[in-house]
Image (cartoon, rainbow, N blue to C red):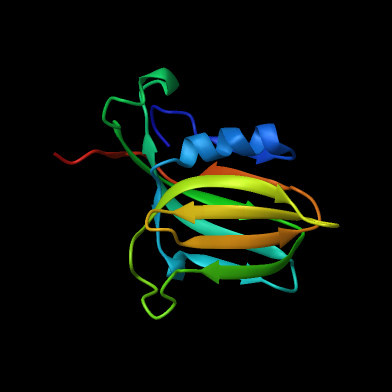
Amino acid sequence: MSGAKALKLRAEDDEDLAIIAACLTGAIGCLNEMAYDREARRFAAILVRPLWKKAAAAEQPALGRMRAGLHFDHVNAVRYRRLDRGAPHALLHLVSIVSAPLSERFGIILSFQGGGEVFLEVDKLSGQLRDLDAPRPQQA
């Protein structure tokens, strides 16, 4: 990766998750780039995230986009809500990622524009975001 340093973040608590969510706000993905490995208990997704000049300048247009890998471990179940599983290539615009306490576990909710969600039931919060390749300039 030339010029910019690759982003690599871990999430072990809600504060960490909020940082990853902020980095991915406005990211684009699709269902065929998301997978759950039941045996490894890992959910993974490849998203194309915006590159912002500064965190404080989010009102300005992104400078480009970067493919990034997101995964969560200790996943017991994955539920897709209000997402068309028959259209795996449809673009999904990520709005937020939050955690929610359940009775004995946690939920991680990836929310997309239009109300769709991917709900992960996890034993504990353990995730990672990592840039996968060189930035792509924003097209006019």
